[in-house]
Image (cartoon, helix red, strand yellow):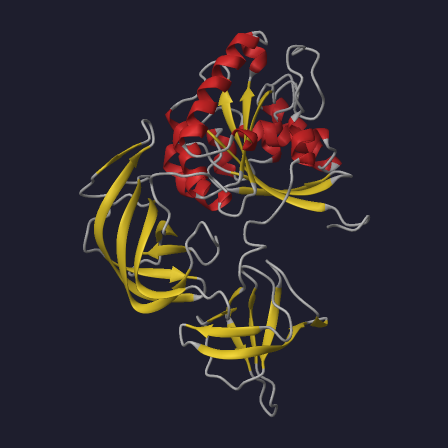
Length: 426
């Protein structure tokens, strides 16, 4: 529970098809919550005048890359930080173009909520279905469907209702409970129901987008999971008997006196102290960077994971996982790649390709390869045993990347044990 002086933090992402108005919606949120500086607003006004626009192009508050401004589309994940008296926010504005689905995976991977936009004139399209499937696979707990450009359909309630019905059918098929999905009619350009309630939609009695973002329950999916601390660096100063293991708490809470195991070695010990640059802590939760001191002198190196002794993950060199394939060249069985899990990198061989998810029909096919943006279930064998959780139990230790050995480019995002027969999103 937060103290009266400490506001909750909500991490959320936006997604949607090209030209659905994601960047304009984000710009409207920043503009109407007075979360941008005066010189930024002036720059947007000048750029809008140069483009011959009569009103400010609020998407320019988000589309910061020159290439984005010139093309008029978002091509990278744009992170923005803002706050209201009730809550603080970290927002990831992800691209809508099919070729940048990999960026959507990146932006949504740490989100507790996703705002998915559709154009009121077009409704749920193929890219909407693809993004919704990705969000479900990533176990993003809550969804908001923002039916944008409602002003361009004359604020027609029947149009909104039909889109909401279509989307609710999709989310039910993906395993989302009804109470985890909210649909809101908005106009990012005009401001209807983004921050302030609109008189143009008297038939809508729900919250504005900001009201929902301020009031939705917040909980990190990994906060209540068993302890996981991937070791990034071993701190052992010269002329000192100090030995600590630096890393970020990926799941659970670490505290002195806690029985732990160091994996994959399987070495038992007890946490002696939790150090930071500001001194020792009585405990540290998810996202906190700490140095853990153990009671025993163990052979621990970068790539090891300090875990809860009572609830350790499986240690295995054989993975069943769901991949979102991100590369132009297709993935075929037998591919030899690098796999990055936590702070460890190891060689890997891709085995069988079991299933591919058709994001349009939400049915499964048996593929002979995975193409760019395909989502498929595969078998992988690694050179080294890895301590892994199911992604549904722990995002941080249930996910990995596949990397091209010659170039170092990321080829796929992987989710351990996540089935393509999508169940209830917890």
